[in-house]
Length: 133
Ligand SMILES: N=c1c2ncn([C@@H]3O[C@H](COP(=O)(O)OP(=O)(O)OP(=O)(O)O)[C@@H](O)[C@H]3O)c2ncn1[C@@H]1O[C@H](COP(=O)(O)O)[C@@H](O)[C@H]1O
Image 1 (cartoon, rainbow, N blue to C red):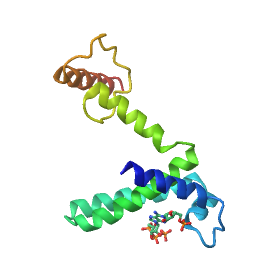
Image 2 (tube, rainbow, N blue to C red; image 1 turned 30 degrees about the vertical axis):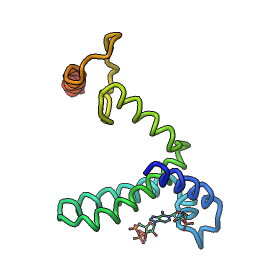
Image 3 (cartoon, protein in one colour; image 1 turned 180 degrees about the horizontal axis):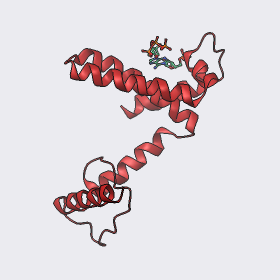
């Protein structure tokens, strides 16, 4: 999948400077990050609605649209797919699965704790963060 997104990212970069009249991507760049963000949010909602409605084929289609719009927003924000893959790999090393790290950095012991311990650390951090917000 990452190869497909890398290829899409390169295509988006290449389309950025095309004539907006003939390129949706160029039009999105012309209209700026706010429009890109709006389209991304719309696609995310469409994925959610189709998933809740039990329409897997629609979820597939809308997910492809979502990834396209996400790639456009990455390009606009100067983020490369490899940046995201590296962050996911960092989390996987730390947590065993690609899940979001708590906002406040956890001071883990030198030797990485067992997965169950790591999850408890993350859960504790999340509870602390919620209590602080
Ligand atoms: N991968 C995509 C891609 N996926 C989805 N889309 C567009 O995003 C739309 C999905 O958003 P919407 O559902 O909101 O569609 P819509 O309602 O017609 O859009 P709006 O009227 O709301 O703007 C689809 O209809 C496609 O037109 C894409 N448009 C382009 N690409 C790729 O981007 C590259 C550049 O293409 P151009 O933008 O055409 O130059 C090429 O590699 C393309 O394959």
